[in-house]
Length: 141
Image 1 (cartoon, rainbow, N blue to C red):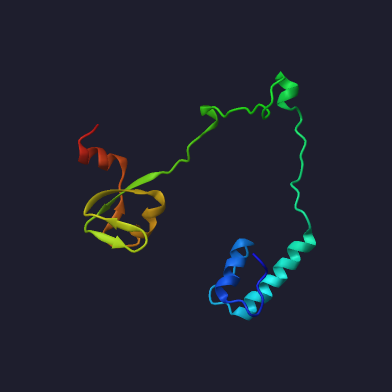
Image 2 (cartoon, rainbow, N blue to C red):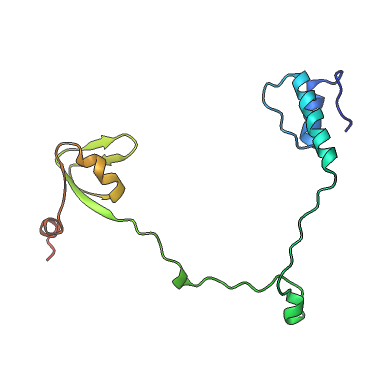
């Protein structure tokens, strides 16, 4: 496709920009689009050919086993991974309550992430629960 001129319509200008992977903002005028295409085209021409950087691998697969392929990569074992620990806390509420952006609690015992507990504790009728209290309520010793 040839470069658009002042006599080209906006559809042809957008098609040229899409072909050259030039992003034209929404609502751009014809004059501004042509100006932008001229600037970006001249930048691309001045850069010349784009070449990928080359890196040297310490030992190629051909040198290693007389086999062409990528160098050997060590795999991670299961013992290397430790999942993130997120602590939970139990609170008691004497009424149902919903806090925007955090969530809600029902009347009774509620299990929440530790990061969610603090805003609820500022409300009346909500308190932290002890382990002994939970064991007594659920009948475990």
